[in-house]
Image (cartoon, rainbow, N blue to C red; front, side, top):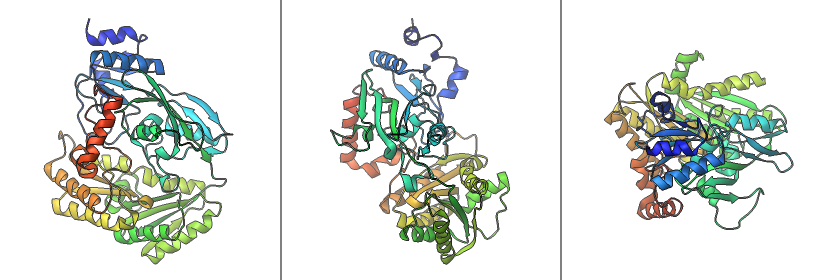
Length: 453
């Protein structure tokens, strides 16, 4: 009996997939990275399935690669040779939704948009909203500490995570955190697991914070600029003025051209950047009017303000289709550096310089209100990995982000793609501490080896 047969024997019929053609779809995420050949994939439907799988993996020293919806952009869910892929996508129960306490207890396979929809039936909302919110899962969002368009006001996933149910490498079940809004008993283990990319344990449930949904539809604007620096300066002015936007997104011309080619948005020749902002405050119309004024003071050639929810959705839809539009151009190396927001214009210019110097196409969007930029390096489909000039340009972008006091990743995670630069940010001692923490939770090193640290 092979080692995978012993796992099949322990789990209910149909839980383990070994067919190579089907298995391939569970072995990769949305990166260009070519996965290894896993032994199989477990389609867990309960915590008990996860416990059984991890006990078996520990006994047999088999690496485990956890995954959610496979929407990651850093290679954190990419399978390796001889591993078992542990899919949590079928664990989709909202175990509890308490309007009185403004919390929900959810399983990791719950789609982000579905949780938000369920909360809104009670006048609440789930704030984190990555661009993939209609297909990404809560478990994946927790594993990478995903951000999103609303994070400028409401924070990233960690800011909404109150407690977790986690299965450790040896199958023991750990409960972290609490159901209350406050609590400082012990170390912040919940915060430690959020963003750990499945290297410390497998999340099987989460208690998350819900918030009051806005009472009226938000007001939204889109401003066009003749330069990225002007757009960046407008962002800085808006934030300095205390406008507290609920969304502030920046798109460069290369991105706008890709969207225009796909959807014909009527892009003008002189438009080098577009800024999309929103307010969900009680006086949202007045706030957006102030943001419009600041855009015009900083060189906006045109500002459109939505007059209906349908127009708002149309404007936000332009931003949400950005990655899909860029995928039509070629394979994409997607990055997400983050810098102090006052230095956003400097980081934008550094990206432009790197693109020109190395002759590569870089399409940049940004969660501009918090300084999180997504430069997407586009290269030809069909090549096994980015050519040298792409890596050279990426290296300049990352080193410049760190030089500006920024970070390698604001929300996508390290995965496999950023491993080569990780030590530049963590330093020798930081790296040692990371490995020490990993050894406490996963002494055999079987949980998502080679990722995140």
